Image 1 (cartoon, rainbow over the protein chains, first blue to last red):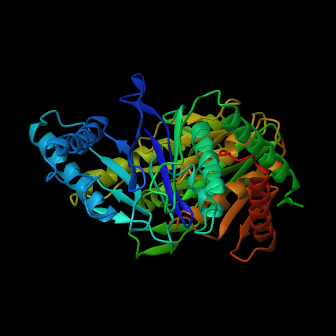
Image 2: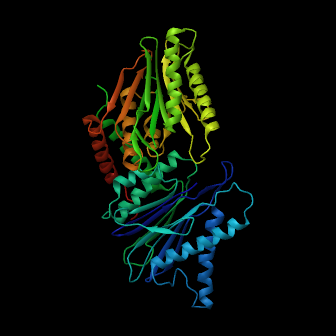
Image 3: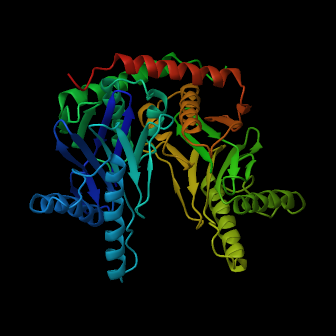
Length: 245
Length: 245
């Protein structure tokens, strides 16, 4: 499995993903799931991928190939030259649809899940920070102030803390902290999500990544958050009233 | 959906369940999911049910009918007169298997999930406190010191706090508190789990329920735990170090 989460607050976009993939319990690998695209000062975009790896890799290949082709032929529309973030979501959705059709038509061995989903986050000059979730079918939804974050993969373990902590006014620093706590809970409760992690940040109206950080298993700052969060929970738990007399 | 959780610590057994059922999002009902059976001083047993309601109600009906029949005919084996808690799990598993076979044979409209699971918890005089999880197929597993709790239904949201807080040495009072916090997180993150709740406790070597409590939506003690836990998390979160400089 996978756990990817992205959130859009007033101050910008923050994204976090794990790197574990498994095709069965005994076939575990490590793959990056966050891919970043940037024209500094004009636009910054991140794609976070979950689900069937052969599908998401192919979608990413299509997106990247278009960017390469556009060097020779500027008429090729890409996520780096298209008119809006909404159009970026469309391009990724179209690529998803094409890959799904190709894959399904050739699939005869039935039992493989072709489910995949992709978070598209970014901002271009002249637009607002945007966050979309692309489904297997290529259609998508956008995050709003009412629902400031999207999760894909093993999302349930880490949802309660986000429900409580994330508001549109949350700072980028607190947002990154909340994503780390959410990921830490997921890592502890589910073996199919694993270190290292990829944390990235696009501050509002800067059209660039202010952070693209690989967090390794022994990262001192992440370890400190994990340790202190455990202590906070323990201490807070002990201070709660009892349910039985 | 449903969220039921039961745990076995050295001091005894603690169980908590919600009461929401839904057959589709617009067909929501309230049904008790914890059923208690007691011969005070000899044995105390709780069944917690999740999944297809027509299945679990039928299993419960079989279990209760046998107890009624045994009044007339003491040779009828029931969960209240059988030789061990392991045998109780067997009887519930057998009932599950029979109901599944009956239901499946008559089912022609295909799309209904007949998945169901039942937690069986209890102690009889001469035995230890036991906790079993019965699957749809009627087979079952038992909780051990390594895995002191079982969850059925919407289990993921409330798992991280149990992973952190529950040890074999946890007191019954702390165990009840942890189940309430775990349920509170689930209630906040998932609409298909709802108040009121049923909390029950079987202290070790007492062969009786020391508590069977219905927790209503406005229960002052549960509300206090929920409110204070929110404050504890908020305060603890603010005290964590930042991930970005």
